[in-house]
Length: 451
Image 1 (cartoon, one colour):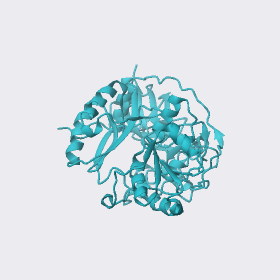
Image 2: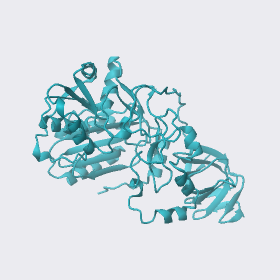
Image 3: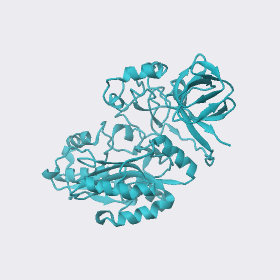
Image 4: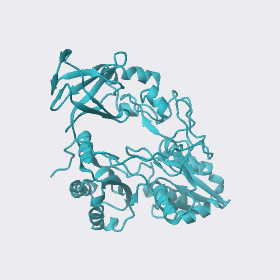
């Protein structure tokens, strides 16, 4: 049985682009009792892999938490399969507001102790005694009640770019941190206030609402299907969106726009901005908000220290990373002191700017083949270095260089240096350098354009 991915992320991205198929991004969750999570995990992989499902799925004895993408053509076949599983039959699927064919690049189904790390002892309270679910219309009405307290049960980097007006937004990095903070903050309002809670897709509130009822809160409500389903209902029913800004998502998009309001700032210059990115220094990988101007000047890094590091040769960067366990977790998400305009916990309901609507042209499918990967850029000389991994590169070839920060750049190779010498052809295993009118980043992909 094949229970693993046989293609790399780069190969999968190439196949997705060449297929021309539109992919849907969606999520769902369900609490149940799974006697054998591993067997369930294996059965899902065998059923979903042929349907080209990609995503991040967690299964545990308490149920499933799934975020994934799949070709739109396979949606109903996928839904039919879910309907063969008793506790997933007719389950609501939260379909993303904005789609990106490359939101996920591999299928990962992991067995976990819990489908959400809540830090709770489920045996100590009735997890099925949940809060009342409210649709978008009823949720909006309850927001207008002066006896309502609305709480965001997401993390600070999620609520910073978008939230419901007047919401309590705990300055936390994990869901489990928010529970005792909110309990203490609202301890005097267990009986006289409506506790109205929300999260991205509803899964965190399922557990939180039961926890707060157990703690003595009398009037507990939760947003059905979270922000994703709320947005769908708002659009379908012509309602006013009380949510402003962006909804943070845990895939390559890092956010989907709900309203045109920008309520956050670039963490480096303070300009209104709500675009998250990850630091280009692989030993940092800090998640933070960065505007286009800072992205260009800082080369997608969070600090001058990281900017200096990515200028180093790859072997030197690897040496600096050696021995760091889980290097991309050594910084707290968005909490680095190097970020001058980070205002975690000081969120505004007043828009700082209006997002510019950009009409994107349909993506043109370019026939190309992956032949190498970027290793280094020499800014003074304006030269990029690549390792050829497949096929060959010849002077006169038309190439495309692609990466998260670089975007997609096309040019014709006018001259080559192969393994330090002037040359006209490079083959697999060769290191090549040539002049570039733009900066490349570590692991940018080098394609040869065909035809």
